[in-house]
Amino acid sequence: MIESSAQATSPSVPAIPLARRRGLLLSERRLLLAGLDLLAVAAAYVLAFNLRTAEVRNAGFYVPRSGTLIAVAMWLVAAQFTDAFNLRRAARVRTTLATVGTTLTISAAGMLVLFFAVPYRITRPTILIWTVCAAVMVTSVRLVYRRSLGSARLAQPIALVATPQVLETIWPDVRDAATSFYRVRQVIDPSKPEAHEKLLTLATTGNAGELVLGVRDDISRDLFASLLRCYDAGIRVRSLADLYEELTGRLLLDQLGHSWLTSLPMRSETSRLYSACKRAVDIGAGAFGLLLLGLVLPFAAPLIKADGGPLFHRQQRVGKYGHLFNLTKLRTMRVARDGDTHWTEKGDARITRAGRVLRTLHLDELPQMWSILVGDMSLIGPRPEQPHYVEKLREQIDFYNTRLTVRPGLTGWAQVNYGYGAGTDGTRVKLSYDLYYIKRQSVSLDLLIVARTAHAILSLGGR
Image 1 (cartoon, rainbow, N blue to C red):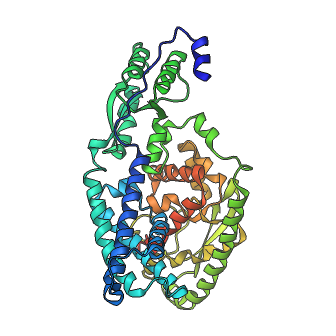
Image 2 (tube, one colour):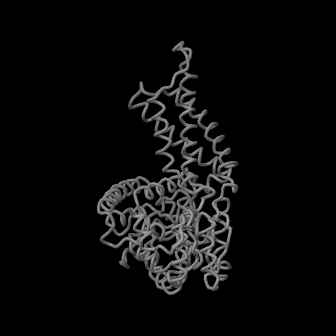
Image 3 (cartoon, rainbow, N blue to C red):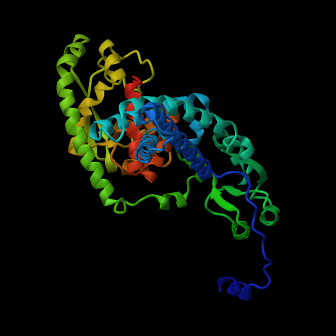
């Protein structure tokens, strides 16, 4: 009925053949990676079970359904914590090995906990054999995936609509992240008169599976009509900022416009259940952190005092909606002279001997649990900055004030991806991650941040 109505109202518009899509979408690549992982995990458990019980059962090959489902479920849960289906990590051998090792360790630990809860459902020797088998099989499958399904041969062909300025200043950053996932088949300059005809030709030939717009929100009516024709032909139309966001987990600040602003959640639209759960976790974490501080303080206090100066370091920081609060940390630096304030750098000479140990173990952060408990901070969010830095950065960086729409955090998406970048350039990078978190904040993203933070702590990745 819809087709006949369209034909009746627009008889002069020729039918456009649907574009034949080539290559693999990122979502398809992730699905294939997850599917291969689960097949390898399941096969490893079946093999481990039969190697362990073959002599006891004195029977043929057997598939333990419940145990296999438990192993697969544990891997899926662990994979969410370790971001195991991150395609950029899967494209490199070193990060592949690290991801498999971390995910497998968490999975095996979860299965051991389950063993003590339900001892006859899964046994410790089977878990041990499964761990070895899964390590070999999952790693092998991922390396095969990297060489075949993850190769550039299956990259999605795209057409890029962008001005020479965008190609020179912005596209190089996107290109580095898009390597092996996308290949540019055509570049169209929207400022040229022939852009309209080139887009119509693209809609007819279907030489690209996606059309990426490196332009701001305002485009001409003719260009919009051409983009609509491409969409009607089955070509996906998306922004350059959206592509970059999907590939890197950060926002492309130079391409943000009013459409991005309207995509942000309003203060009243953030899920009340999510906010309530996050606040409950903050209260629990704050109380536990203060208890841990009470255990650490008798040992840390003499070491800090031995370097001279007070035990605690207090600074005023800017919180949610510009609210000022006092942030307290265990002192790890020499007492600064008046006016001697600048960003902390890697290997900063001001760090004391005791402070180096406290920073490595992240124990200097424990007093901030009080700020979390009383609601000035959250466990997860953008790191709070000092007021004079905020005033300076507001003037230098667009959108900086947007990061103040959520509670600052003890750890955050910028910290686990970039670290403690200093200066205006480093702050811009951190802001791109902070705005990504503000836009996409959710339980799953919070869990991923917690997992990466725990990994940094356990690997002694202090600053």
